[in-house]
Length: 202
Image (cartoon, rainbow, N blue to C red; front, side):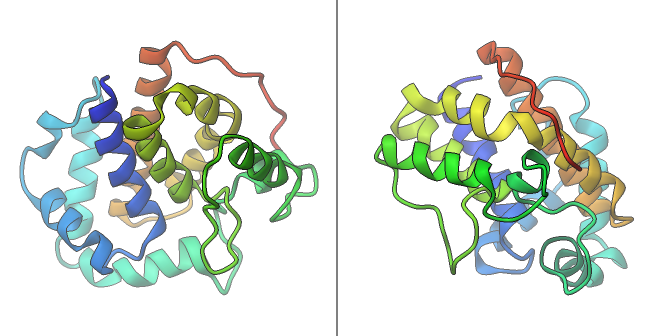
């Protein structure tokens, strides 16, 4: 996969996993994903067709009306999230926000001269922020992209996306979780990425 394709897929998935579905940031993406046959151009191998069918189902009536509420329940609360989108929940034994893995990410960002990802005091290790950062690095600083993926995304993202797909009945977010999982696996294979297996606490 070329860096241009990684930038496109990372930016798309990151925005969909970070911003509310009906936000200005995602309006154009939802229109594109509701259209037929976009999966033919998604630069990943097999399996995308089923994920795309779920996404389109979730963007049509009656599911479309529940998009915002589902996003609230999956990413914000107030109740316990079935799949918390922050890395430290999975990587730190206490399953806390701003845990040791978040501090390690913050240290790595500073070391590489990358501006803080924090928005409104949120931890930097939100899956959406990290995928958008991967997209930015693919275009602007590809030399450290593999380190971001191996050290700070891939050790926990598979488990997160598994729980996200299991944790909702809404087809849009089930399809999005599956599409993200397929895409990250494609990145891993194409770039021959390796990482130390970490014990996950969720």
